[in-house]
Structure formats: structure tokens, C-alpha cells
Image (cartoon, rainbow, N blue to C red; front, side):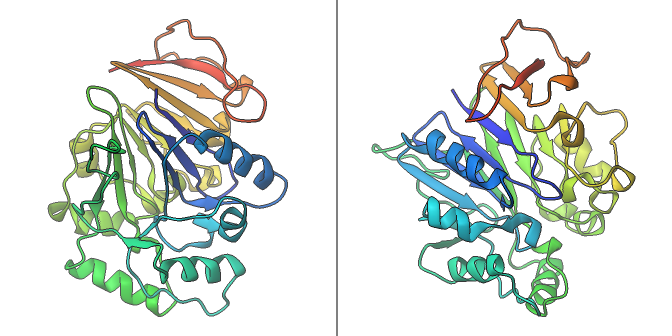
Length: 300
């Protein structure tokens, strides 16, 4: 059974997917303070029986790569999936230096729209697919090229973000869009495929600056939008859609099971969601910390 975890790590992003195949995927990194030890220990425990572990970097902003050197030290990164770029920064942190080292190494696999990769989205007799597809970037797109130029100058990084989608056959699907900005998403609307997707992790941690455009939402038709940990005054709340807000829910866990998606929060105070069905699931001990609390089930 698959498990998707979204961590509460301050104004940043960090996720993992424990696939229902011999795959384990980490998406972005935000490790600092006391939580970095237990979080990396959880990653190690949950991935230890998986044959393939990959790290997907959505883009080189500090709040998506902080502590990557710590992660690589304690859980060596062998497969680094990244958009090919020449991003620079005037004042390079240790984390950015390590990102750059991985990006420019033989551990890097440069992703792009509709790319094919063994075990990411191609099965063999040895191992099944992870179910991950890359919907963006189109490396020939002029808006994307302009974003790469800004990153190379060290002035902006958001619009170099990839778009990744994880889907389970006959079950739920999930999408990550990094920190893409609203105007950029509007500009590339005709150049990107946007299949219906169950859960969308809102761009730029849910900020208004990364509001997913209505024409995107019409195509994606999400059943849940996860809004990240940006300060509430900066958030866009997606009126008319079912939401889980990381500020109030803490760590969020999704367990797909056939035509159902069971949802959990690490904060007991979050409570059951009225727009979810009560499937009678118990609270669970996911990972290495205190339990996670059942908040309801989405019927697909």
C-alpha cells in the first residue's frame, strides 16, 4: 500500500512517497533544527526495504533544499532528479553548494516534459514503475528559457520549477508544482498537459503569488488542494475547493486504497473534516514520532 507524506517544516516543502512498488521518492528538502534528525530517521526506516530511492528537486530555492547536505550524509543520494540549470547565488549557503555539487554530478538525471526513465515511469522484469511522470519543463519554451536565465544570474528561481505527477492505477493521483508563479502558469497553459488529479500541492506554499490559475484548475479538477505553511496573510484559500491547510493540520498523510483515499493529520486538534467520509479508520503511528490522527476518507 502506498503512502504520501507532506511535512510541516516551516516556510518550506518536504515530501516523500512510499510507493506500492519497489520505489521510494523524496521530493525537496527542508531540514533544520531538532526535526532534521527524526525526519531523516523516518526516511531511512520507511525506505529500507525499497530497491530504488530517488530525490526530486523541484527548483533551487533555499526553502526547498535546506539541509540537503545533512540528508546526503546520513542517507546518501544516489539518484538526483533535477531540471538542468546553471543557477547561481551571490551568497551561497552550504546547502546550495551541495545542491550544485549533486546537480553537476553523475548522480543527476535531468528531467523534462514527458521524459522516460527506468523505474520512474517504465517497468522492467526486475522492478515496477514508481508511477511518476514529469509534465514540465518544456526545455524549448521561451518562458522557461527566460526563467533559466534569471536563475543563472542569481535573481529568481521559482519559474524553473518542474511539475511532477504521481498516479496509482485505478486510484488516487497527486501533483507537485514547486513555486511556479501565477503569471508563468498562465503563460504556459497551452504548452502543458493537465490531467485530472486528485490532490494538488498548491504552488509557492499556497501564496497568492503562486495561485494556480482557474484554467489550470478547470482541467485538473482537484478533489483536495493542500495549502502550505506560508503566513496566513499571504495565502490564497481556493474558494469552492476542499482544502487541507498545513498551518493547521501539521504533517499530512495520504493512504490510497483502491477507490478511497484515507487522510491523516499530525495535529489532533485538526479534527475530522465534514467534507470527507468517515470510514472508521483508526489513528496510526506513521514514521517515528507521535501518532497521526484520522481526519476522514475521500471516496474517488
